Image (tube, rainbow, N blue to C red; front, top):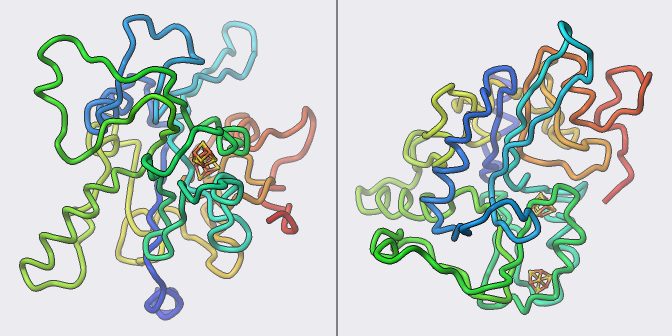
Length: 280
Ligand code: SF4
Ligand code: SF4
């Protein structure tokens, strides 16, 4: 632990998640909490997935075995807040001609600045995780519901792209509170995402991957010198071989789940995660 503390003590924050797929029941509470917290407009008919906006989407996967060997798993997918092989080289950030999406070196969070976005959607094409959504319409809420919108998150207008921000407004609020109390640092529990708090299964753990005191660091055991690969044998990252160096880690004891996550080919042995070192 001591060595890890030395490794990390001068590093900026690096917010990330560990999502335990074996705990997730697919209930969708995290999705609902995300909608509510971030003023995400919903449609009367959400069946058209090209139009619906879900910053956090829960995917269902299966091992494709016949009964009684059938197994399913649920993969909650927020923006993965990719760092790339050279910190800040997220696929979406690299292509945006308007600097409307940016990488924070202070927190590792990939932001979206709506008033700069002019809707070219390059970022959507660049994102390997389909984590970005385009507003084809101005948001419409059922009569009266606009009164319950969060004042901390600006609603988005027609023509711009939006995505998960790791509830960045909560970080700002926690920081303001800490400063008001004469503290320079915020505590782990002071900045938590809405989905983390809403999950009844406790499947989502959020915090600073660079802080050995934070649970997410202890679960992930990131190898800081090697693109933050996890030392936890249960952990994997989605499409890790692309070299996106994401900050959302998934945990499962099931081989088929881990293989699905990194898009392994049939028959390919486990254990090749993150070999694509040259991408970036
Ligand atoms: S749609 Fe907006 S955020 Fe995306 S690339 Fe274009 S300007 Fe940048
Ligand atoms: S998951 Fe997609 S939107 Fe999020 S940082 Fe990576 S490329 Fe950008």
